[in-house]
Length: 117
Image (tube, rainbow, N blue to C red; front, side, top):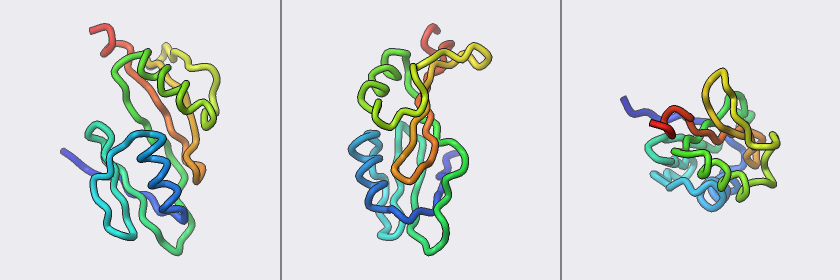
């Protein structure tokens, strides 16, 4: 079942620039006060409000291989908050964390069993 995760923001234009140009997500819908992105079928959105921004939780972006995760890490090293890219054996993933311009935690990962199979 498809869906969209929405977050309140105070920095709509900074997030538009970041997710389009740094992350490489597609702009799925621009509704003026809300922008909805699509990253390989995962839809997430930011809406400008007068309330505090929502920065809890983790936005996880999935890749097909360790090489793709490493490539993204090289491109986004300036926003990475975990070094180096690493394997998490408890979950059989390869990943690193970063932060978006408003401070949300981003995880960039691949499932190692998908890569091998």
